[in-house]
Length: 120
View 1 (cartoon, rainbow, N blue to C red):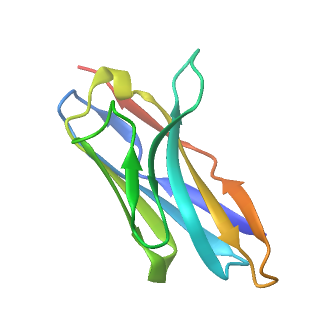
View 2 (spheres, rainbow, N blue to C red):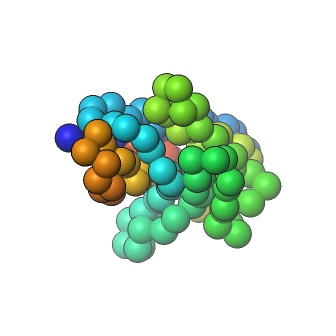
């Protein structure tokens, strides 16, 4: 079994910054692609940013130039640096990881989410 734990959420004013972390633990041989997703009240969950094992990244248009995803493979941790935050960034942020276990099977896991609130 694998656990993903997000941290770093909170309340900030518009223009502020937060850094989210997603730490993976458990039966992990390697971690493939990891994505940060968010879900605002009344809206569908959307992909915000993703990073491959090799470090290739992709971003939603709404966050390009403001958010940066990165990973530390030695720590099994992925980060989301969020700058120039806007009220529309308010949501619960989840990480999702495709993990290969020691049996060499791949499975997808979700964290429990961390709340980000951007308001004056």
